Amino acid sequence: MMRFMKVAGIVVMALLLAGPASAVDMCFDTGLPAGPGYLLVVKGFKRPRPGGCRALTSAYEASTSVPYAAVGMACLNASGSTLYLHWSTLRLNSGGYDEEFNARTTLPYPSLTGGTTRWVSKALNTGDFVGNAGNSAASRCNPAPIP
Image (cartoon, rainbow, N blue to C red):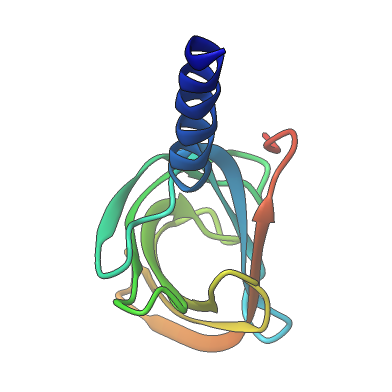
């Protein structure tokens, strides 16, 4: 009986510890309705610890016909109530020119709804900048979309 209790305790502890650290595919809907409405997919997203940050690995922009690779960071404030996400990608704009796109999203945590995204893009052929802000949300994507 004692051995069973020990094993059960270890299993319960492992499940509790794996919960917040487990990786899921996340979809970050950035900038709707005022912004471009880009969808950032982060494969294997792990929530940062409160007061910490994590690099966004295996991330891509999935709202266009081509999945453009993206890089960035996700940070959780010290109280664990706000998730900050900053990401960038180099993509083709609607005119067929290279465009550098940068976004910063602020989301209430753990709801991940009712957030805001501020974004700016720079057309590399002209150097013109455009930017705006919009509503944002995030949720688990199951399965992760690939355009």
